[in-house]
Image 1 (cartoon, rainbow, N blue to C red):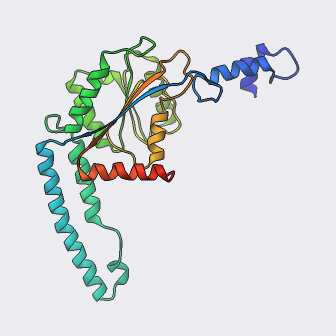
Image 2: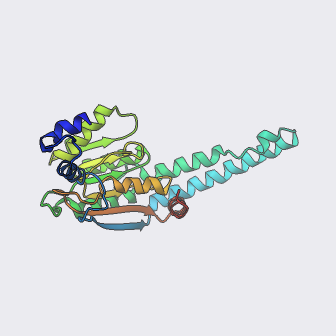
Length: 276
């Protein structure tokens, strides 16, 4: 109330600060950063989900990973069987699998490493970037782009790809878990207000609760674990009633044709149907 009165008190001509004129002004300011039922400036969203083929080198590595996994899984199965025979039911019936965890980690590295020549996702992400980089939004400003990722391996790979395009670190900021509030606010302010800062990287934890109304393009390098995290990611820049901002957005999801990526895709879709 004190901050409200200080900012809007000049509009108050009576005994209460909650007069119609003050509230209307307050709502007008809020409309720039929030979705409201009364807002009549919807955002146009251009959403595209691309399923791409991985490179021959990645296919070879993928097959090697699966072969190694089958060996480790058979070894784990033998250990569990032996544990049950020896009366160790807890160990024998354990549902955890170190082999499965190693397999998933290896697949992620294979799909998101920094080898631009063989990484199909990086190549496709650069193609999407090229389609937006020299274009302006509906407000006449160069389009700003956010890259969404769930593991820092993907961010590091994309940073190398951007460097190959001549995009400097001064044009890029990152919001991720572990950042202090002051560092996060500084990065957001730079992205929002500095015309030369065109790119922001966002992790699921880093993007929680922030507004990026200046953003125009979202490129998701991989899928988050739940549909709610995916929706939250889109909501960072897709916000109705963005007065003085561009009201058109482009959202790109990059999935590969591998069983690993398609499983992640189907899980997110299923969780979305049940509200997860």
